[in-house]
Length: 398
Image (cartoon, rainbow, N blue to C red):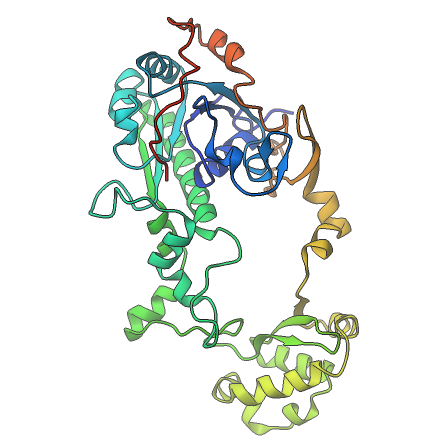
C-alpha cells in the first residue's frame, strides 16, 4: 500500500519540538524526511532527565521515520552541502530565530533561487518582523504572551500553563496544513513558496472562540478552572475514593439525565434550575449539590451509573489507565526497536486514511546514522574530510 506523500523529499533543519513534530507528521505520511543535524546533534537529544540509550525520550518521541545526516552549517563546506541538497528536495523546514538561516546560508531567498519549486516552511516564536522577532522563546513564554495562560487555572491558583506544551504542538499542526496547501498550489502553478508561522500567532488563533467574548465585552475571560463560562454543570467533582469525574449537561435533557443518575432529587425539584439560564445564574447551588452527591460513592460506582444513564461524563484518568486501555493499546500504541535505545513504545499517528494511511517505517535515527547514505544519494562528495566534525556556534532556534 502506497503512502500519501511517498516520493516527496523534505530537508529538515529543525530542532527541539515544534519543528520536528511537524516534519514527523510529514514522515508518517510517507515523505522522506532528512534530518540535518549539527555535529553535536539536535538539542532535544540531550533535553530532559529520561534517556534510552544515548538519546532523551523527548527526542525519540518526535523523530521517527526520519534519516539523520550531519552537516555543519557553521562551515562554508556545510553550507555548500545543504544548498546542493536543497536543489533536489520538495520542502525545507526550519525553526531558527529570524536572521539565523541567513547566517547559515539556507535562507528562503538563497534556496528558492536555487530551486524555484521549493516550499520553504519557517516557524519561530514571535515571527520574522517586529521588535519581538529576535527574542528567544519557548512554549511557556509563548503561552504567557498569547493569553492562554491567563485563561488556565482558577482564583486560587493564578495563571497556569497547560499540562502539555500547547504552543509547541498547535504550531506544527497548523504549519503542516500550510505546507500541504503550498504543495497543492505548486501542483497547479509549478512554483514553490514560503510558509511562515509564529508560535505566538498560532496560539492566539487557537483560542477561538474565547476571543469572541473579549471582542463582544472588552473583558478578559475569568479563570474558572474546569468550569465553563456559559454551561452549568460543566465541571469536575470529587468521589468518595478521592478520584475525580468530569460531567457536562449542556441541555435540559442532559441535566435531567445527570441529576437523576446521581440521585440529586433536590436539584431536580428546584424550579430555579430547570433551564440552562437558571442553572447558569445559580452555578454555586448546582456545583454544591453535585459535589455532595458524587462524594457519596466511589468513581467505579458513578462510572457504571452514568454509563447506564447515557450521561455525558468521564472519569479523570491517570496515564496508566489511559495507556493500558485495550482500545488505546490496539489503535494508538506501537513498539519500536531502536539500535541503541532498544524496544520502546510511542503513540502512532491517529489520522485514518482508507487508501494511504500513515505508518511507522523506521525508528528515530541515531546521530548521523545516514550521513554517507544520504550524501551518496544526492551525489555529494565533501570537499574536505572534516567538514562534519566541527561543532557549530550556538545559534539558537525557535
